[in-house]
Image (tube, rainbow, N blue to C red):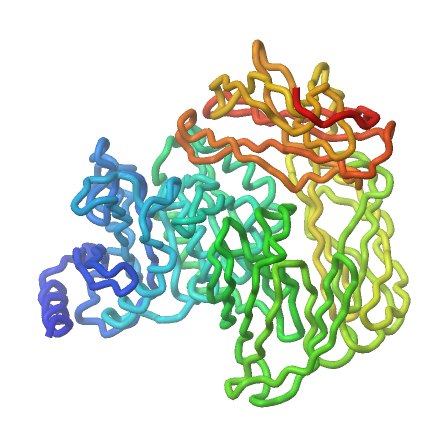
Length: 631
């Protein structure tokens, strides 16, 4: 009955609508995910009621203090829905009035108590309620597809949003690339704490670039936007790892400049969608999730991320980590995976499970279920899994041979392990290295690769030079026959030795936190003598006036464990929600005294909104062992 009344309303509106004037309706539906009534606004083309056509859909996610039907509470003139008060009327309404598209503006309202007028949407940073808006998104999509004439496929579905909604647009699209074909982001923060209420996770778009296989993305930046520093940092990775990512920068402050151009980006994506990828990767903050027809579940009850890499019919790599890419493995987590319908029902498949840290290999025979799906049971360690007969190659760990890290303008050679995770030996052949990254020269692209026995590995090497100090990553691809194996390596500008620094190994210092607050902190764990002993944990501090700043550290030295990374959230300082990082490094037990440690340090220096990233090097010997009682 309600659906019938809505059709009559749409037909009536269509009779009175002027050309170029869309139908704007504020509606509700009952959410089984949230167990409550939820609101949304829908923008329909002028001829929707009479045309009989089906339309692509853009889901719009609003920002802080907004709702589905109202602009920023303190700035009503920023009504980008309709009217002439913002950007000369370049609004959602104008665009829908002139294009065959539906826009659905969901409601991010997240009250902590009944009826609370709470301006912070989406239950992110901090995670305060049980409402999980990404989990709600598929329900909303299903409702819209059932009640409006949509083109109900991922190729004709998009997300877009402003500020916190821009973050959500990218997060939701990266979580559900099987539901979304394109995503845009007007000046959203690059990171927030998100996920389960009892164990939220720091989600950083910088590190999630591989979630967008098959999705076109667009980031809108403003020259006067208070978040622009973090956008530039994000692009220092995405521009070199995302082949279908674009950026538009306008002379604007925080807002939605040139709305029509970004919505037109989605129309182009609808007309030329990317195909479903044959091989994909994904990182998820939730213990259980669907992705590309696969189902993943785990018993994780602590902050962490499930990492899937190079997933296809022939296998995948999996792990569970505290943070990515180099966080500590959560090996005790039990992981269950069910594949997409990729195999013949009830057909037996040989599954090879290679644990990469020690080369342990086991073979099992698994029978696909009646739907043609395989079931896998693993833990949170790193595994390369192969399905089927024959050889199957995968890239493993890498090590720099002639440098402690990749430096801009300096030739470097990387030694890479190549595993055969299949059940038969590979044949000898040629491995060819290539990259789509500009400013990267590969010294000798082709190498002979010997036969690799099943379950074994060999090492090969690739030399290259980067001439681009702005990037933070280089992406290479190893081609062996029909196999394409990707490798991502962090990259850094050349840096000078620190003029002064301290080793904090259990001694208190006054350290900057939250950008500009001076806080007494006892960093590290050791005897507090300002030297690094085997078994001690330490931070590297550099002076800033009458206090110190802790550095994020990088090295390829096997004596140093850098898996503990601390986030210093600057939200109260620059109102972005992002953070600076610093490392608590551990000198591995057994590291010999006088072994010289060479580390690269990175500091985020506050100067809102134009913060500055500085690099420096430190070099010092491991000290002879002493008592580890902190002073």
